[in-house]
Length: 296
Image 1 (spheres, rainbow, N blue to C red):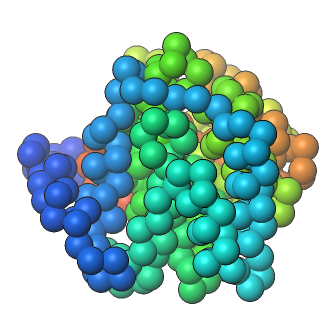
Image 2: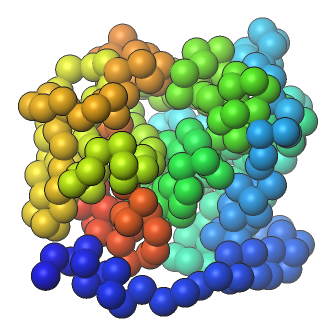
């Protein structure tokens, strides 16, 4: 029996727990231990196709570029970087992650823009980026994203701030090259930081496959090859886009992959079937494979 099948058998219902305690988590004093699962869960639960979204204006783009230059520097300037983000509507939440005991800073934009935010460890220079472009649509990708952030020291979690169908589909940041999400992804690409982007697909889209690994529009990379190899080592059924056709799940129109290829930065586009996103043990299979590939 495969590990995924054993996970399916062991699965226990957790309905109702997702939103439990959100108010408590979001009102704890700054700097204390905080439950990031619940904070990010509250953000995702608030998203709908009817919420607003807009692209950043030129002055706002300039502020973000300047802020990222400070936050991503070898010696980050958290104060000035956070001040610049705060000036365009990002709220900073600082504390200690109850999940792993590390300090964190979560910069989250107001809901009127739909920009989302980024999560960093202020004690470690950023060396890699985990991306969640479709929260509330590709279900549970934000949970896997946070789990990867915790297991990849020096990583940054970039999460979109709107449902992909908001604003008539303009909020689909994986296909909007004017979005705030794209701007941040481009900035990390200019610094050659590797990115892994998490997506989900319905089982009927590619029957008999658990996950699709690709590099979007970019060339095959050693990191993508390693991710596919580690997933296969978990006895998962992997479609490798540089070897076979994966029925439109290769991410070739993904605009973050365009930027990464332009700056010669590694980019892994990871599509996951619902059984791999449904519960924590299944997500942990993916997380451990990606972490092993990154560390190899």
